Amino acid sequence: MHSPRLHPLVATTLTALVLAAATSSPAAPPPPRPVTVSRPVREPLVTTLELTGSLTARRQSRLSARTSGLIQRLEVDAGHTVNQGDILMELDPALATLALEKSSAQKRQAELELADADRLLTEGRNLAKVGGFSRSEAETRETNARVRRALLESLTVEVREQEEIIARHRLPAPFSGVISRKLAEEGEWVQTGTPVLELVETGAPWLDVQAPQEAYAALRGGEGPEAAPPPGITVLLDAFPDVSLPATIASRVPVKDAARTFLVRLALDDPRGLAAPGMSARARFTLRRREPVVQVARDAVVRLPDGTTRVWVVGNAGGSPVAQSRPVELGASLSQLIEVRRGLDDTPLVIVRGNEGLHENQPLAVTAETAVPAVE
Image (cartoon, rainbow, N blue to C red; front, side):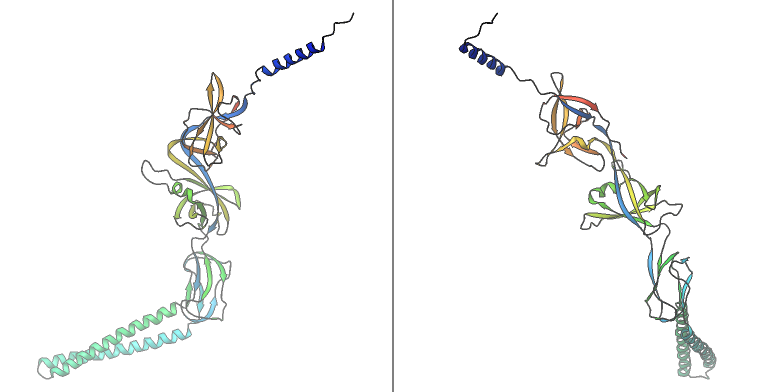
């Protein structure tokens, strides 16, 4: 049995009706965007800052000859450890010794001449009392005694000067340390001020690091209830990576260089004496503020081409989660957390994954909630 065939005009009409019905039906809504969220925190800001630097000696000196002369003995060489006061070098003192003997002899002669002048002065005074001596002669003897006394004082100073010159023929160590360089040899003639040895203090070296200018205030600490507490500092020596040494800020030099950094000098607590000048090390600063601030994960912040920053939060539209943007003003960002100064409180959920290309009131599917990154 054959089915009835439709007239071509009727078939065309039915097809047009079906197509019109299909195009007039509403489009299916897009699926919700899957996102990962986290909760802001309100607590004192704790950030970490890690800087690399070098250990430097507290004292390093190029020791010079304290007078001119011929090097008679050099008691040390490069690498020798010395203590404060050890004699490192001696010059030939022969000429200085002869000069001292000459000055000493002149001093003894002046002492005898002064004694004779004092005797004559005493005799003149006694004779003047009985009228057997003229006033003019008495004054002459008194003047002569004064001249002899002044000469003796001058020669006494000259003897002390020669003794000091002889003492300067010996070079003592001004502090304990290690001889890093020997710049002269025995038999050389050296002038006053000629460097002969280089001495480096090895105990308790400084760690010098260059800190960014943004961290200057945070590294300062301060006093009073509103001031930030001093940072906690630990140092890791590259030569001993498993050893952590506590440290404190000894000084800060508030003079920035071309790289906009400034010098921070650290004093290490190193009872085992592991640190030595020339080593490299890493200093980790834990910076804390007293007042609580709102903080979010770095991944929650979206930076726009016009320079503004936004954070996407999970809003509510008819009981369903939707995306809503909040313009924010950011603060410190020295770790995985970033401070939000304005535009966000600590109540909404912020989007940390899937926030690329969102638009206002876009439906969301919250697939996970992650914890705020912990401070290392």
